[in-house]
Length: 208
Image (cartoon, rainbow, N blue to C red):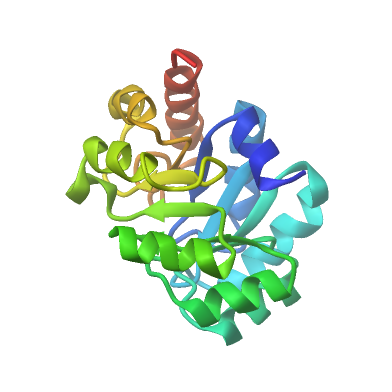
């Protein structure tokens, strides 16, 4: 499965910030059953590489799993060694993008300005994470879409909930990274189930 295929199936990347290795699978299986096909474990979570390795071994090609808050090429390599396929960053770092693509992983660097967006595209990224999206607003994506290559996918991440997805979609976002809206450290699997169902329902109502 490619990242595009995962987002076409369901345009949600579930961010499991703070998840522990001993609980990651119970939450991830719920997300997968709900229809989500992309899962990110931020590297500032407890033993994140262990969680990523568990997800990679369990889901293999059925789900795109990887890391968030990736800041250095060395971290990219560690994620790749754990079996992760997705590298998400809060910033645009050309060395991180280069290492990601060198290792055949999916790159989703954080961007805000047109300069950052075109820097990432020039380096080879096709999936750009507008972060923090809530600070910029949907119209920012609309303006970026007018100048970026048509094959570039903008992901809206940061401060977006189920009620906001339709507005961002109409502005041109084609993916959403959801953190606390779908998972908070310590929450029960049942809470994850309820949140995931609510989010997937919102996505199903999009006017595509």
